[in-house]
Image 1 (cartoon, protein in one colour):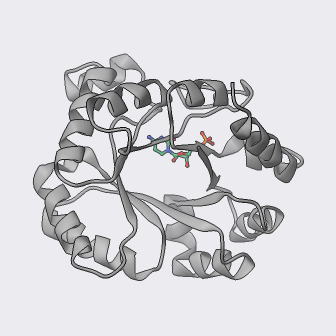
Image 2 (tube, helix red, strand yellow):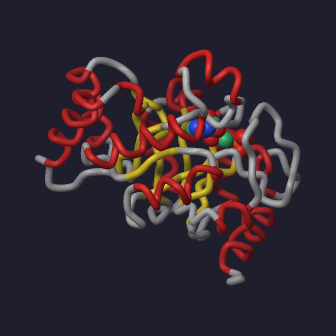
Length: 231
Ligand code: C5P
């Protein structure tokens, strides 16, 4: 299991300070909408300058018509990042077009699709998708798997079932992790590292429990220790 740290801070300098504190640790850095819209590709170069071994997950959750998504995916691949995501609800054609374009390149990033945002509770989710979170997430995961996507973003509670339905190699990345039971903030379906391990999550995403703490590096070290411990 790998740890992806969310760079969701208010100012670019705050994000950079956080990355500096994480130098030489085996973590992935998640650059999301706020940081990318504000700072653009500069933030990617800055992270790489601090530590070229840090892997970058660009969390922009693309959702558009297939051709626009495939064009954007190629531009994203040109940024030299390691992983990005699209919304599964963009559909099979979009998935196939994105993967066709990326697979024709020498190197391509890992591509994940978002099933259900972890901020949804069952009621709000049902209003949009007319199905419960688990069943719809499994539908989205199967569709993504069949159309060549590398894995999904889901809550930790769907991860194991998604792997059973698809393949153990199909990646699950799970946000909404409160490593040691911290405040869940606006997230609904949250789990601890223990939950993530039990559900075979490949990547956990942690934001606020790290960057809102007084000593982010020590929280990250503690999480990495916990990830290593076998049950
Ligand atoms: O601060 P927190 O740990 O809740 O941050 C979670 C991060 O994961 C945020 O950047 C959020 O945008 C992202 N995310 C999520 N749920 C998804 C996909 C991404 O919370 N389904």
